[in-house]
Amino acid sequence: MKDPFEAAAEELDSPPESPIPAEEDAAVAVDVDEEEADAPSQPQASAPPGPVGGGGGGKGKEEEEEEEEENMDVEFGKFPSGGDPDKMAKMQAILSQFTEDQMSRYESFRRSGFQKSNMRRLLTSITGSQKISIPMTIVVSGIAKMFVARIVMMERKESGPIRPCHIREAYRRLKLEGKIPKRSVPRLFR
Amino acid sequence: MHNSSSSGPPAKPRVGASQASEASLKRKRGVFQKDLQHMMYGFGDDANPLPETVSLVEDIVTEYITDMVHKAQNIATKRGRLLTEDFLYLVRKDPPKLRRSSELLAMHEELKLARKAFDVNEDSLANAE
Image (cartoon, each protein chain N blue to C red):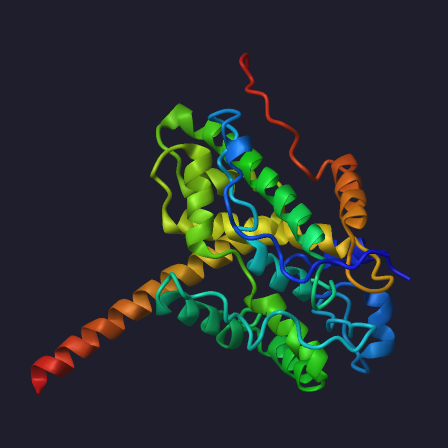
């Protein structure tokens, strides 16, 4: 019974893959090796595919097709293995065995992200200047997404939706482990 | 147990709070709500995460980003303006994040080149006809 957080931390070399290894032993009949992606576990309740509605539909309205195009390429063209044929084959094997629910969740996992325009607006408001380049928004979005992954995946999936108290607990634990940057104080003397 | 309300908070600025100080951003609530819903579902939450949970995660993430940006700015002011590299420097001790950031940047470059090549081809085709 591995701690889901540890499992998540192990797998964080590519986009964090699934939560909850404990459940997935039952849910997935595929033999997966530790390092590679574990298939997302099936939600306990037969939850309908989430707010996604066709995967990533919310994005790409303000940003033009560029962003959708990017997402599509990321989704299907590039596997997390990064071209390694062995891993790709394994990935294909896993994906082909996904149930509908698992596929829907995986799709959300891959495609979800912070909308560039919103992120840019946030970064601009924080820095107070206009010099926010697109690569910067990309990097910050990526890092922030991994952070969300850590927070959410720390939760044991007991039943039903995650409640704020769970999140607070996870946040507190992460803080203790020093994963959350404390309020930065400028170091005056070096 | 209380049932959560059906729809999330609308993205309206909180006027009272925003008057507090310049630094405290006139942050709209629920800016990332939709994105976060998909994200949390992808990471294992319920298909329909509780709105209050999403709001809390949004607050936490915004705080995280804010802090990260301030740190990056502290680094950047020594040299001049804020650059993407400053963020990469920040996560240098966190290999997964560093790797992922580099990967994302590389993909972005690749796509840019691909699109440029595509445009060039279109042009030459158009001229040829």
